[in-house]
Amino acid sequence: MLFAIAFISLNTTAQKIHENGKYIDVNGVKLYYEIYGEGEPLLMIHGNGGSFVCFENQVPEFSKHYKVILVDCRGRGNSSYKKGVELTFDLQVEDISLFLEKLNINKTNVLGWSDGGIIGLLLAIKHPEKVAKLVTTGANIFPKGIVHFDDMKKTAIDLDIKNTNHENDLAIDLNNLDLNYPNLNYTDLNVIKSKTLIMAGDHDEIKGEHTQKIYESIPNAQLAILPNSSHSTLIDKSNLFNEIVLEFLLNN
Image (cartoon, rainbow, N blue to C red; front, side, top):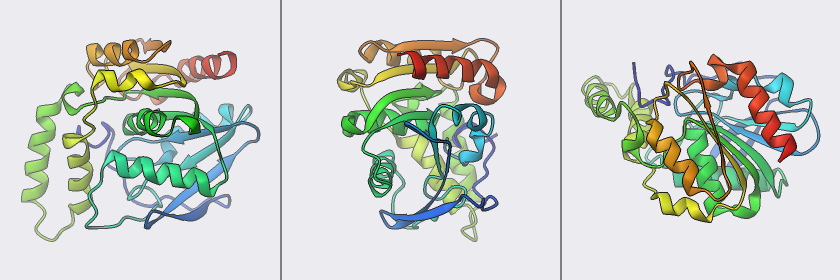
């Protein structure tokens, strides 16, 4: 298992283009997105090695209450990738910030899973005016907050050895992203003004004490640890996950 790749199976191949799907030029790449529902915007950001299809259990319910915006981050799903540009979280935060500007969305709620949660946290720090409410599940703020951090190092070596024809270039970039970034301190979270819900599974790939400390470092944040759940809370416990997230978004 490639633990570094968002702790889900690596699937960076393009998905079927939906009739609602559109592309937008942002920061040197083309980002693919789809929008469902009406009302207050809710941006959903997927994890490292997947695409926004991971939210298939959330969209039907959430789009009853919000304008759900799904976007494939650079190099994933149907979005393009720019080789030679180091993949960092700061770069992806800038992607998302410019993406929102091009959609004329001044402020949005954000739901982020894994690396998407990291992007959400950084967006709330760097562009607080753009984030209304923030929900993260399975996010970390430095690499050693990951349970299987040492496995990520082994994965990096293995991918490099087998990269004779550059077929692993993107996988290497994705693995290195989580191996090297982000590099926040807990005190960096003190500036977050958005109403925030921090979530994780009780058998998450993020250390429990790390999730707890993230929660404690954000003013007035809320914490939800889902029982009998892995890193994939939104899949493992989709009904409970949806109930908790909607309760937070609609009533806080």
